[in-house]
Length: 146
Image (cartoon, rainbow, N blue to C red; front, side, top):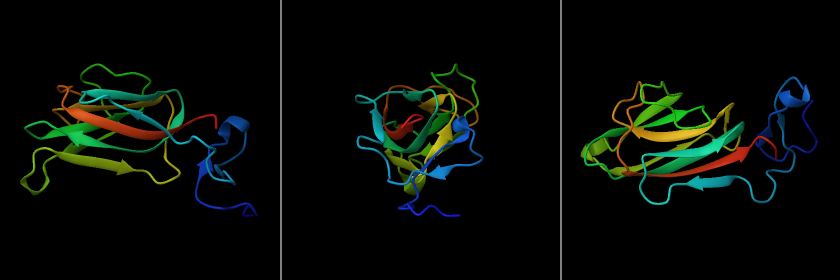
């Protein structure tokens, strides 16, 4: 049965409370959420958060003179080169552009991460091959406990 307090599509994860599925958070996110994590200037990686949480989205800018990839990991810290990401995508390769903006949005529900969330640039998409400090990162997330 739908909740009489259903005011949107923001959900909280309830398995830690023994409930069978995600339930909507009835009044939206509390004040101060989502939280923002960002690189101070250009960087090669960003640990968005450690521990469980929801990544709402992220964006940034690639200043590299050639194409590169942004990789996303479900980990609490930056992995060693050769690690396999959750997913990756090319930056700056469209319409003849080399440098450029990028963004990913998972909706107001976000994407669940069990160990944490790490973003990094890489010269390869299938495995991590860290690049130089030529990318800006800005991410919005909700920690597990809200």
